[in-house]
Image (cartoon, rainbow, N blue to C red; front, side, top):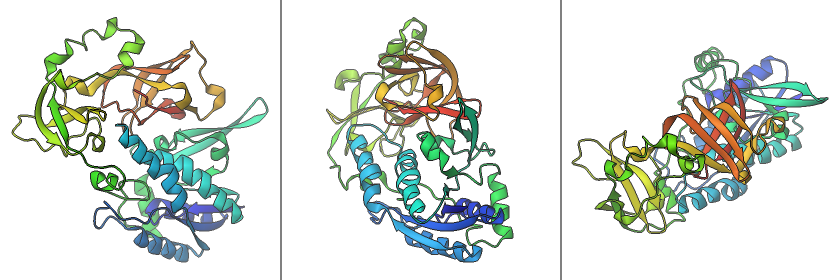
Length: 391
């Protein structure tokens, strides 16, 4: 059985390749080149040429064939252009989730199959299981054993067809164990730092990166004071589910102008850096973005009311189930564990399916619910489904 490992130049995929070879599989290494432009990339952030050189050294050390595929054109269309489009609308996309759905387990998978591979393996910290339901094999996506590194959230948009061909060799071990194995085998990646930033692009100065397509334009920063909300948190129990899921609506007269910015679309809800207004007891945070009027709304303090909401909404077209047999029907309610960003501890919530989409109502108020991001729901350690937050 031939397995193509997406060798990235990092320690996780390197150890994944080692484990598979040790298990006796016919392993090949395939390096994805998905981005060439360095505009906005911060200096010293593991440029792709270094990744390529190190990945090649790993393949040589493991004595496995090494291939490269250039997917940069389709990566730009499916991931980067989508990013620009979402930021332009005042939403905050998650390119890593998109990269897995659109590139690693789609285009890259198909390229690997052309090389004779039966499966594709990555260094993700998650697991896959399977069972027979109504005579058919059904695959489940499970959290990684290492709860500190669990990356199932990044794979929340995978389908049954994609999971069928996917393997996650390090999902059953912890990060320290991965480092130990890499050191014992003298792999070139043993002490290499984990990559950060946008998948395949790296760590970037986001406004500079986005200015490749989005123009900078000066607008007002408006501070919203706590009394604006008129005890909205205390009234949460009296609101309908639709009202709970609605973001706060701000207008220029919702507060006082305290400064200017260079483009509301360069910011995201909960952001602290880049506001550049000092002299406060507590820092200012972004609580609202209006790209139509190019207005940035901010509030003082980590616990400002504008940062917290009880519910969110996902429209019907954006709902995705890893297992279709667990899809919710209109009028159905279920209790699940939910996260709205990577590394967020799972939160208790009730999911309510209505004709227009899915409402998620949390037991506790959530900080920084952001349109464009993905909400993923779990039953214990199994990731059931996900969707793009509409509002």
